[in-house]
Length: 388
Image 1: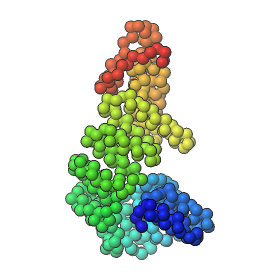
Image 2: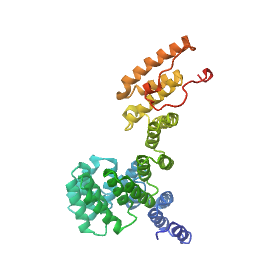
Image 3: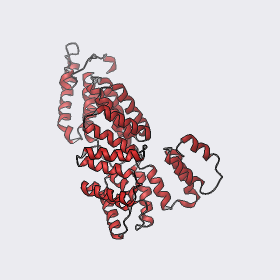
Image 4: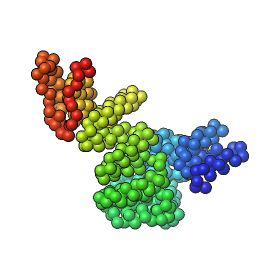
């Protein structure tokens, strides 16, 4: 069954058997109804199968792209059941690749080699191991071996394509992706890989087509929406780009989307819209930080974007004579190493301009927007004193 409506209809007619929930989890997951699938697996857990390694692997695979840390929790549980167990080692290695976890990937590879049991799944895991190490030729060799073990594993062509892209073998990569799609037209990762290859070749219109096909086959993966948004932006289709970015944000509230939107509007000279997005971005980050005590904002992966956002807001407030807000944002920026010097300079400028304004507001001359990084500024920078 490939149709969502058909699976929902059949599900309502199934007898109340103990294996019922596990089957539904598999069926819903197959057609992308992730939330329903996960709920079915949770109900199956409560029947006494919470420690079942196959169930934990299934739950881990279900959320691998949407929630990798939670996926790791499930799949680690399955591994702990028996480290010599090689079931789903291919999926586990995919997850470790996503998480860039070199330590666990090395342990997994050692376990496979020590076991001496080689099959398609083990070859895929070793391919991911070498891919993570950057040894792309060995990765291709292992993925190719997996296909010799089992030619029906069509998605392995996609993995080979990824490695060939890393080796700058774009023609071979396109052939590999095409092999995957010819075998399974719903292999969204191959469509996505073709889109990325077209981007490398600067064939943006073709990339857009492939990213659309990837999204059609996996609408729950925000990477497809982000790729569409980036390509629309490259093609100067701003409204389409904005729509894709917002849809991606609605799916998983990833703050990276807000940054892409803010930078897009910044380039277009829509500085007020950009400021709104940076405000939301910094507020979201602050909320995340409150939930994860002990993590410094300066240590985040997006520290560069965060520092830029605080400095941008400081300059934006300064142009509007909101001196207190401007100073607070510059203080927030100074914890970021690359922004510290500029943040201190901003604080001196804010203090000087605030003093000049309060001493003689009638003769106060505001700074030119272009000097603060707003070359396309078109709106008025004069604000009523009542708003300060």
